[in-house]
Length: 173
Image (tube, rainbow, N blue to C red):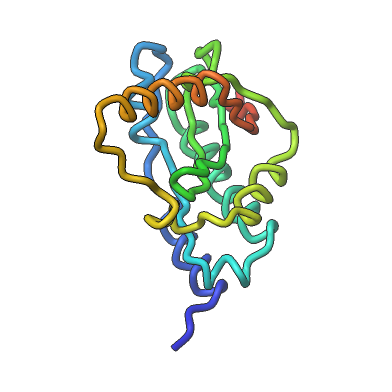
């Protein structure tokens, strides 16, 4: 039986009620990241059937669930929701951290967008939904070439600008 997007997104929707790790402390960011990190790896046959709104609806369900959990908590905080496309992994990712953080936990430059569709569209248009194929990678085993490749990788990372969407999820007072 050929998998279809409706079944795929219904299965994902059933998993959205995961409890969030809620804290008002900024020194627990690693726990927030690990506990509140959602990764969407979608097979190519489902990607070919999916459209942007399919992902936005799923993400909205997760944000709605996070708001319910936040409102039930005793903490006096809001949440920061952020969404990005990890092209090297071929994954659409999003996370929640508390609003006491003054910046998002990335080690690269960020380009903010006010449209989550922009991030989802990057994901949908990618050629790497199942990661980078092995035939596009090159094995390097000569020490000088390894050093050269390491320097090139550092330069690329230093110049990386990641597109991110973020919004504040406000607790009802």
